[in-house]
Length: 163
Figure 1 (cartoon, rainbow, N blue to C red):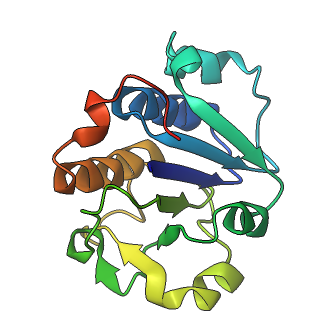
Figure 2: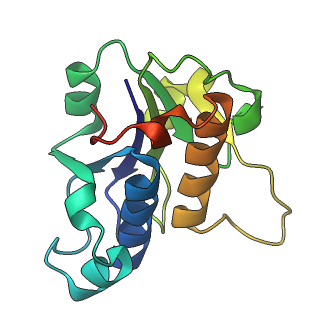
């Protein structure tokens, strides 16, 4: 099973490229929920992901519901500034499970309808009030590496793409 990064309607190609690079380095899956704010042929997207794109399993979905239907046993966590608990308070240690970290678009975050529906699964990355939010690619890396740390970095030992 795997760690999954889900980008809900991402807008900035460089962030998506950086997250793809993190996914390649951690054997995590990347899911893109459409519409995207850029073309997947975008030069900035490819530049930020460097030459790692062949090592990233990327799936495209038309909606978050489509993704959730595909993985009914998955553990979905919605990363938002309104989270009820810190990301580090969740147990991700079961490497046989699928953990999905869902991030919203850079300018608006996740839709309120989604965070209201899954309020108990909204997680918070603590930060000062000096910033509105952390950079999307930094936030994704924080979540991926916390889950991997709890799993003793076992996914890094795997040679194949995430499942």
